Length: 339
Image (cartoon, rainbow, N blue to C red; front, side, top):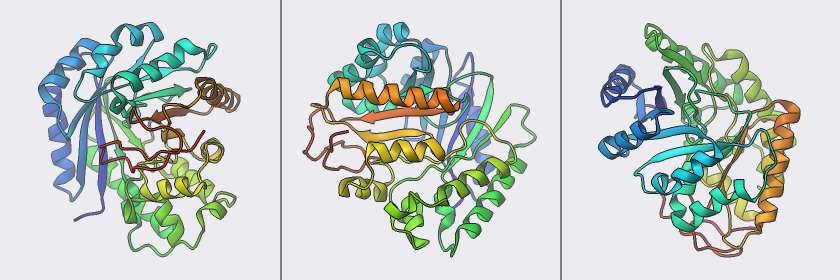
């Protein structure tokens, strides 16, 4: 199997139709005919009703949807509809304004009603539009963007330079294959890891000879993000390192050892990452503590004009000190720590 993996091809459409899925099929076919694996096809649109309609008709392991960024009132009014969908994501923009209980209530209502949907929700700060990665995706123009799972390209690489070179070659190939589409917005070169082994960012960092804790105070992550920003032939979206606590299973192991605290996550996000992602939250965690974290991320995002997000996940039952039971193949179960 090829290690050229497209995590997502996402079409952004103001007024999506069922035929939009056929366009995604055509784009995906062009990629797969050149030895790429396409994991998911996605549609993001501000047309709330149209998205929910498409979700009913087309939702599957390969087709998923997003309504993008919602206002607080819109999210509150439609939360029950969102939580009864098959696979619809959304986000809430907290760039400005006071972060209070009203904004936090969205998260805790999801945890109470349908905790599995915490996977489909995030808070965003100074978000970049048209990233194909959910749930941060937000609509600005019609067109499509592509995001990869480039960690797999590291298989067999002996050093960082070799892996970065493979990424550049792959981005150039994607750009060449899709360049004649007038609605091609670009490539989000974010590093989106998953599982373990060749698909894990932390796994590759360890193969380079680093202990994870020691790697945090080296410039290795800065080297990667510098390369992402300078060598992407058609950048769109976030273009940073993702540190998804429970999706990168080797990072989840570091979390369980106490090596990936919320402070370390924020530190890495500030200089190289895109935020707090799939970070486990105990049902008995203090709401005031969550507000403190959100206010800190808001302040740092605004101070440095840096896109950041916060996605906490919960199984709806597990407390601090208990092992989770997400029943989600993308999330590794762990013993929850206090944030």
